[in-house]
Amino acid sequence: MRYLLGKDVAVNKEKAVEYFRRACDASLPDGCYHLGLTQYHGSGTPVSMPDALASFEKACNLGEGGSCNNLGIMYQTGSGVEKDADAAADFFAKSCSLDDATGCLNAARTAAVVKETADMVKFLQKGCNLESIAACFSLGSAYLHGTGVEKDNLRATAMFGKACRLGSADGCFLLGVSHFTGNGVAIDKAKGAKY
Image: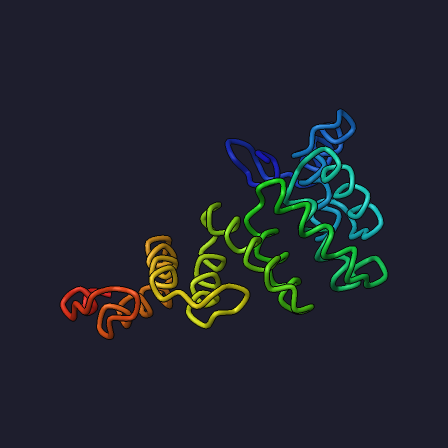
């Protein structure tokens, strides 16, 4: 990373790729992940979707959740591979199982598209537990509207509160609205005005 970002050394993307490749050859998952990123984006090496795919697959098989998420995106969008919604969903779910919050959010979104709302909620809950702002906000919305779960204003407000604490302006707004209207909490206009 030092050569890629220029930390204490001059930026040398080619040298960074060389070190990522060595790390990946030694079966270090982070090395394979970063090698895949350089191959995908053409940073220090030409763009090569087949090489990026192979690097991400190796890293994913070694337990690197971000690589599983990237594979899901590649299969979802058809980047370097034929589009395959089932493969994308499987990679997103594996990413989430490896505690990648972005993978949980993508798994939830994929589940929502195919109307698997119970799975959607499960993935959102895990993503929120991993402190994904978007997952917490989306889980709050699911509880607010009863999507995949019983409508529960108290839980919705709690999820909007967590999203707010993590930095979501929308979460703060809906938390404030909840305090103004008494939706899931006692009416407290002074508290609502804070948000």
